[in-house]
Image (cartoon, rainbow, N blue to C red):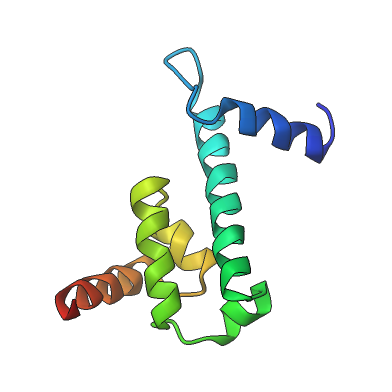
Length: 104
């Protein structure tokens, strides 16, 4: 129903407005679209492309700064974050975040 840009606009309008009358799929899609935009902004601020993300270490310091924001503000799963930031599995991401918190 509609093109990709149309869907993107609808998801942007839904952000923060989902309620009990919206199904889980709509909530997930809206949250994921917002997280993708935030991630794209973070990558742009670093001057990175998707290829740069894949080439950097799993425990790269900049990646470790991006992951908690996606987890806390967007409530994205560790699996989703690990996949998008090329940080291994959800378990290895959890370990990286735990060790990073202890260092700080």
